[in-house]
Image (cartoon, rainbow, N blue to C red; front, side):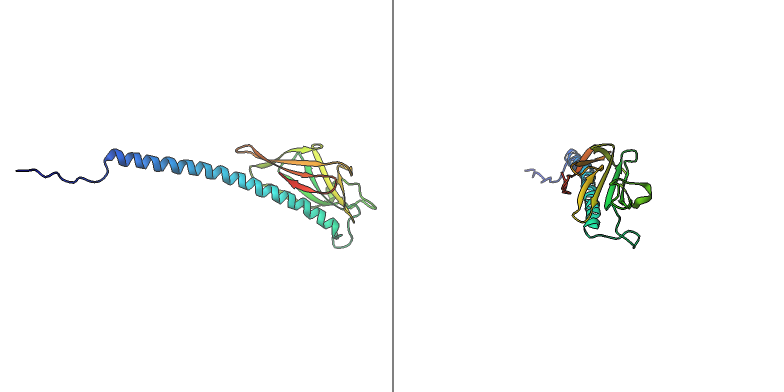
Length: 177
C-alpha cells in the first residue's frame, strides 16, 4: 500500500508571526514619519500665514486703508515682533501724526496674531524687537525706523527643532525660504 502525502498548505505559526511583525514595524515607521511630516507641514503653513500678514499690512498702506473708519494712519501700517513674547505678533496702524514714527506703540495695535502651540519666533534680525512699517503711498518700507534695512523672522517648531524663515527687504519684498 502506498501512502499518499497530504497536501499541507497554509502558514506556519512562525511565518504568521514574522508577517505580523513586518506589518507592525511598517505601520510604526509610517506613523512616526507622518507625525514629523505633519509638523513640518504646519510650520510651512504658519510661515506662509506670517508672510501673508506682512503683505496685508503692506496692502493696507498701498490701499490707504482707514483706521477706526476715519482716517488713514499718518505713519502707515506695520507689523511688530518682539522676542519677549515669541508666541505672537501685532499688526498696527502707526497713527502718530503727521508722518508717524515708524515704530509700534501699544495704543496702535489693530490685531494680535497668536502662533499655534509648539511654534515660536526663534530669532529676529536686525534686533530682538522688529517693527516693519509700510508708509504710503509708495509704500516706503521702514524696518526699525530705517528705510534701507532688512528684516528676518525665524520661526521654530519646538518638537523636532525645524525652522522656517521670512525675510523683508527695504524694497518691501517679502520672501519665504
